[in-house]
Structure formats: C-alpha cells, structure tokens
Image (cartoon, rainbow, N blue to C red; front, side, top):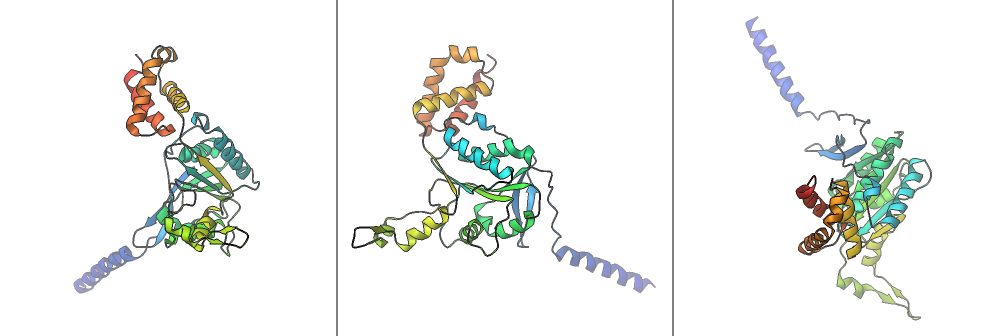
Length: 294
C-alpha cells in the first residue's frame, strides 16, 4: 500500500510538470475594452489581444494647426463607424505634428459608437492574418493602428501589411481598417542609387526602376494619404497658448504674462530644434506646472 501511494504521488508530480510544458489556452479578449495591444506569447508563436485599461484620451478639438487632416480622418472614421465604405489611412510627415494623436482622437470621439483600436508593433505585423480572423465576426468596428512605421523590403511585416491592405486571397473584413503613421511617405528608406534604375522612353517619359516601384506599391495601397508639415512660428505659439489654458493657467494670468510666455516658448522650441505640436505641449506642461494657480 505504501509503495502504491508513493507511485501515485510521483505520477501526480509528473502530470503537474507535463501540464506546465503544454501551451496555455489563449485568454479570450475583454471585448468591453475600447483599446487593445497585440501581444505575442513568448515561445508559443501565438498572440492575444491585451486590453488597455487606461487609453490615452485626447480630444480632436485639442489638436491645433492640422484642421484639414483632422477633418479628413474624422470624416473617414465616421463613414467607417456608420458601416459605409471608408479607406485605410496613411499619415506621414514631420515628427510631433499630431499624426498619432489624431488616431487616438478618433477613438475618443467614436469609441461610444463601437469603434475599437488595436495597436500593433511593426515587428508583430506578421500576425495580421491572426488578428483579422479574431475580429472578423465581431459587431464592433476595429482600427489596426501601426505607429511610426519604417520597413526594409525583406521584413516579414512588410509583406503581411501589403497583403492585408490589398493583395491577399482572403479579403479584409468590413469591420477593419488600418491607420498607419510614418515619417516616410513610402514607409521605406530611399537611396540615391535607386535613381539610376529609372529608364527613359523615346518620347522623354521617365519610368521608375523596380526598387522604387516596389516601395511606392505599399503606400499606394492606403486609400487616404494625410501629409503633415512643420508649424510656422504663429501656429506654434497658438498651440502653446491653447495648451496653457487647458492645463490650468488662468486666462487673465496668461494675458498678463503674454510677452514672457512668447519668449520662453520660442526659447524652448529653439532648444528642441523643432516647432511642433508635441514641443508646444511639452512647453505648456512645464510652464503651467510652474505658474498655474499663481
């Protein structure tokens, strides 16, 4: 009897160890959440949607100096949420000008109407087919958000994104769009040597080489392009003033300190080497933190 008990104890121990080696069943997503991150499980090659408990809340009205881009992405998202045709969106241009903030802003505006945001890292874009299968039958409307994209042509994520946009034998479901931001219009580095691949026809037309065509082909699969440019001085100062009021600086105090604020804001931008919405927001946080309530 004693030997049998020892044997059973050893078997239970072995079973526990074996269970630890088996792949864990995927945890179902919390579909009540409005924002998700795609996380790959190490060693299993399987991903999951991880709910973001406190997504960055930013109002579209707080984004200044990008009125045309804001109107375009808001219109496109409204069509999408309403179940009407809409386009994948590529937001490109100067850093800190509000590209990512616009995407977060449409979530804040349309989240109550069923819009959901899935943030996917560039290196995890190979999981796009898995993500598509996961959300295809859901009633919500999903935007896959890829921030700060830049590829080499050999990267697997590049091919996965290209197929998801347009080119896979499996169609993209109606409840999914892709919004991507990048500092590069064509999402890939461009080199001088590629210009040598261009050919000239007898009537003077210029045709880009194969490498250039390959790079253009990815960005062309986005139906809506939004370009962002560095702000001039007046726009930058206007954004600083807006954020100072939003962050608690009294309007009367801001008016009395107008010259001081202008000088410090310009010095701040000079130190950062950029006049952008991000720099304006960072200045306003610093200044309001020092002077709000005084």
